[in-house]
Image (cartoon, rainbow, N blue to C red; front, side):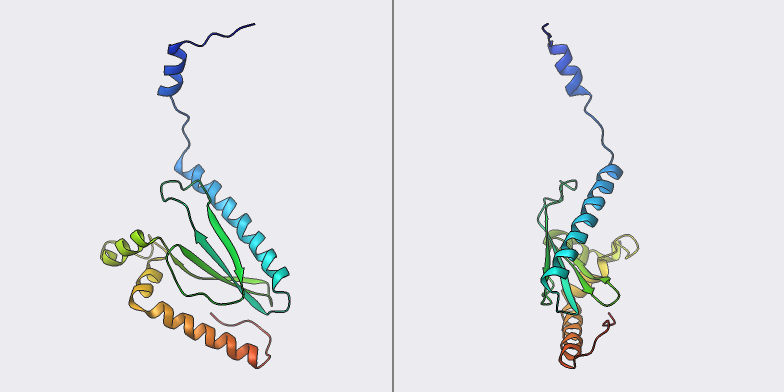
Length: 165
């Protein structure tokens, strides 16, 4: 049995591409994001089994136009990194099994646009706008240093329990 494909069949297929909504794409991205976060947390718990806390750094390495592609590195680490572009940071505290969001800095182009046009946006529309502003005016590094000092003090005193963020 043979099948004949005509030019009309090809043109019909090309002229009617399958439609995938932005909501579907975003939903799928978020599901994958959560799965990868949870896997990185499990990896961190195993890797830093004697520590009271560790950091989970998500470094986005995908082109902005390809939102459905979840190309990011999920890194469990013991040290508190400096804020930088394409970075989302969490702290996992073993007591209470608590994962807290610390900050998100988008790519450089987006961050610069938001910073210089912040009067056009609100933090209700762009949840990470306050972090972008703090990143550029130096307050985010100050907050990072305060958190680092709290964590160092807590560890050196041998105290258990969560650090208030």
